[in-house]
Image 1 (cartoon, rainbow, N blue to C red):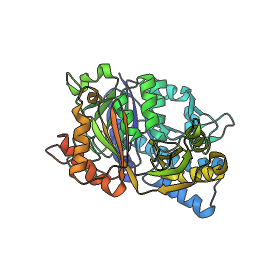
Image 2 (image 1 turned 120 degrees about the horizontal axis):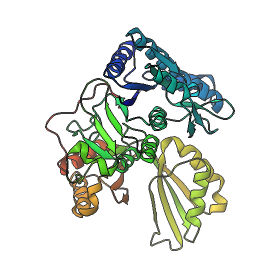
Image 3 (image 1 turned 135 degrees about the vertical axis):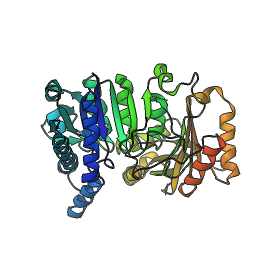
Image 4 (image 1 turned 30 degrees about the vertical axis):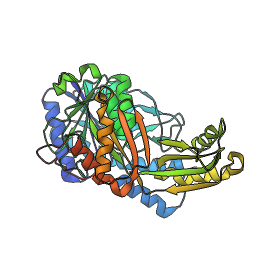
Length: 424
């Protein structure tokens, strides 16, 4: 008997029919002789609707009360799904994050998990019943509800899989696993049988929306096998495992050169001009940005020939964090000594990812040649052992994904199927 944790995203439980379909899958898994724990997201666009509702009431909702509000979406899903499963003849019990034993720090809106004590979940499993847990939420030392931030239901599922020592954590969405590119803009994207945690981390960090970054980090830390698949089909999905066991699923003796292409159009670029070219200047700028709560991705610094002693620093960060980063920099202008701040929210990041890239020097040349032949200009470049990332104009991202995908012979014979539309 296996212990399986199943997580269902908002597109899978978007309406009553979706909830009933998911309930049948859960019951089928249970009746196949498995113990089952389920983590569920809010229905469809419920979280966005609640955020909009809060914005209609006040321009600055308090963080504590906003977490209470947003946690309601998953509570609705868990209750309805437990009813649907029970209606199929298998007793199911719904639990909030607090009731399930997920404990967090005191950061509202983006809490981190500090511990999981799944005592009540364990008792349900001992009775051969099904536990349905509200994702995305937990409780802090003040007994307040906290939320884990976007994608938090993924992290909830992995955390319970680790705490319960589950055999696998299945992440269900509206696509048949992870593909070599986003099938919404690259119809020829190829299904990937298996990925390592490291490859998946790079893809999640650079725009692949199928899994949340923190969930993959958690899975790697506790070596939790992930199976990413669709709730709309019974097809085998994508296995995410450690490197030593990857070949069990993809059957390859050697990992492919390129794992996939990720893109992210939720980024913006800030350029700070005429920064003193001296030791510590960049450190002071990035400390100010960090103190504002903004996360920096790519960085480029150069010293113009016609401006000796002065540098220009450009960096990317989420669009949602630009306002507070710029405010913090402007507030510290006299201390930092720069001349001007320029903002550009019309950019996107294209990333080529693959563990085999390290031993194939021609990959970089082919990547940039494909972009050049398509007439696509490059603004910034960043690399790691298994990734090449470029900042491009946001309007060029769809075409860039397609031409690079084709250049590396990643196109599949058949079009990828997207059953829903959100990827979660």
